[in-house]
Image (cartoon, rainbow, N blue to C red; front, top):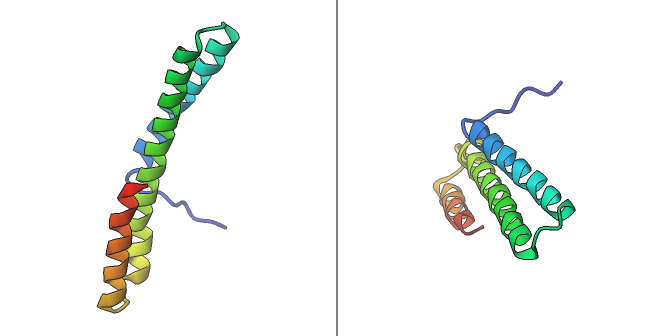
Length: 92
């Protein structure tokens, strides 16, 4: 049996994904309604941004909690490598 895996950022990630879902439904409706391509692409861009922001938040939360817990007992050199890895993920 798997235990619940919940972090403090999960509500924000969920909200971002719900927003993306709403934007995506709008895109489908816009296509069905024959809206101009520029308007459709703008909405698709909003979907991409919302999903990307949710992904980044989830990755950073995982690094801050799960990965940090796993390497806490490791020597300082390993911890420095994890800190550097966390820094570089900001550029995802």
